[in-house]
Image 1 (tube, helix red, strand yellow):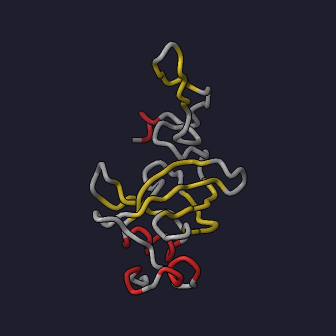
Image 2 (tube, helix red, strand yellow):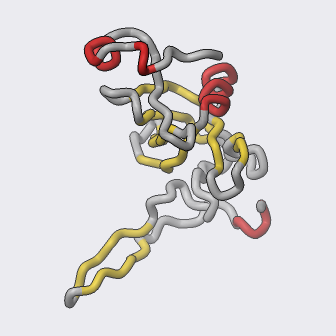
Length: 146
């Protein structure tokens, strides 16, 4: 699948036009915020390269680029927690994607076994910041899956 090169579009065409021209960064990646269709909960933030984006659009299953592993990653391929694409949007200047999915399997989008990667909150007390668990339960045991 090919995409329009962003540098071929003027400002108005990039921000108001119909050409899909994802603006990948210097490393060839674009940030993706993934939300759950039913709840609008933010499940995770990841990155895609052109191949992951193409596979996501072609298959309807979320694919990402794993920066830590340096390889393509079909979300849920190991765990069974696939993400079925409902909708893909881009922001105004096409440098961030919003992916809305139906989370399959047990409903765990996070590799820690939780529904979302955002299971801790920052708490400020006495001039220092700590993280506090929000109590989101594990839906699977990551040690038995990965």
